[in-house]
Image 1 (tube, one colour):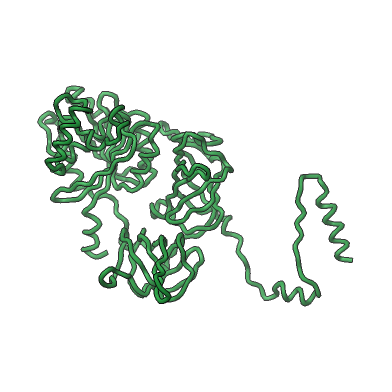
Image 2 (cartoon, helix red, strand yellow):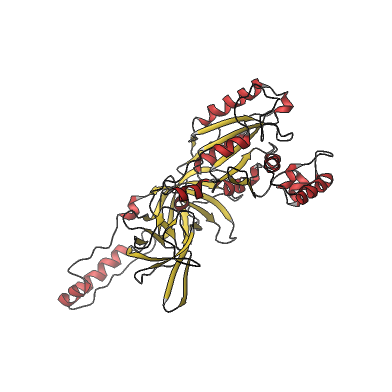
Length: 474
């Protein structure tokens, strides 16, 4: 990857705030926006007015109202939906997702975490590490986020106790040993008063690390490798006239140039890229994260849901997988029930086997389970009604993640991560043979056919089949 491309991708950090309910996530984001000078005067004036009407801080500004915009959120004092805010400093641009801490809205937290590169996990210094803290940390790890800020908030309510801060940090690190979190940075905070948000606070002279904003400006999150193979799910086929056919979509991996050999999956047809169509002029290259339109050298059958891949390193194609499933609906997951699975730009029929096991988010024990309840996490096999292109989630988060949709209500009821294809689904292939059906028909003097006798056990299928075969043979 060249330097301009790296800079274009690296100056934006997407992160989430998560943790248990009432840990101060919305207040923290409001303080960050204020510290980054991302609030214009009219918004500050509106915040002051809303703080007087809805706030919980008396005459002071209630920064939580900046992201808690729903009336139900203001009435109950909790975050319900995911709120996204953009802000920037001289060093970096940010997109932050404020996710709910209430257990009932864990599904919304999954939505916010699915595109994040870093997680700020808040802990109330009075309460310590709670079950929801563990659940969110587990989901963060499952979704491929490797950088975590352990924001130990409300330290002012425990008299800025260093001992309390260090105890919570030890408890969390001991728990996180079982998670794939590469970097954990603990920061003592008081989001309400702004301590250690933008600059180091005088209330914590024993803390020598960076403020939260300083850490976010300098952290280097895990980035996709520059040489990963091309992945471009087709979102739309543009056909304005008989002389143009373009394939539009967002590049989920690698890069592409005119002349590159590509393979269309799941059909397997191979061709080359003719053009990368731009508004003013054609582009010489397109990279991961960009939405583009390609034309191909040959007229191939590619439609919405197909994936254009690097010809020498294509994605896999299968219809059965082992997956990790996060269930997000009050109605439990029913093994064998038909659902819809949305993978990228394709939606297919799906069903799950009974879970191999469920995961206890506190102890990490693998528990026997017949189903998954609301907020349950487990491992189960997924069967689709047709083959799709995929990568393992560990290799490509976009190509290996999917959501589960209820066929009847159209509600999103789960999210899943593909581990690998079940090879038995790929063991049966149509073999091209020299002696085909037509040749056998000419030799035998009659047209071949297959008769299928079906029915309940003991109803006489085998007896009737034998009699029919005897008569036909005669």
